[in-house]
Image (tube, rainbow, N blue to C red):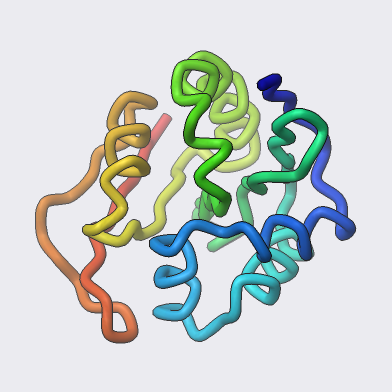
Amino acid sequence: MILSIIEAAPGHVAPIAARMRTIDRLECAAAGHAPDAALAIGLAGATVAWSALVDGEPQAMFGVSPRSALERSGIPWFLGSDAVLRHGRALLRFGPAFLDRMHADFPRLDNAVSCGNRAAIRLLKRWGFVVEPDLHMIGNQPFHFFWSQR
């Protein structure tokens, strides 16, 4: 299986939404969105966004959207399928370059991750994010806030 990263496109939304991991679906629902709407909103609002393809098929989308232009902070996001997470080593290796690009626009990156999204929490920590230990309810789900500052 080959992982490649390309610029995200609207045509990637439906295939990724159809294969989205259950925990990512729960995160979308907590924010009040269906998977396809969450991806479309993320893509439309992103300053940069990419899609991860596995064997040429869109399996994840990620990027950063502005939180505050005044404070120069952004909201990093990543939604995808189980297939993309099978490429954990590649994600670890590619991640820093994409985070550098996000940090070029926004010195501070912050968002929330479901406390049940253990794979994402491990990846965030490996990429250098601080994952706060306190739980915060978003919708009906417990989340951890996470952030990175450069």
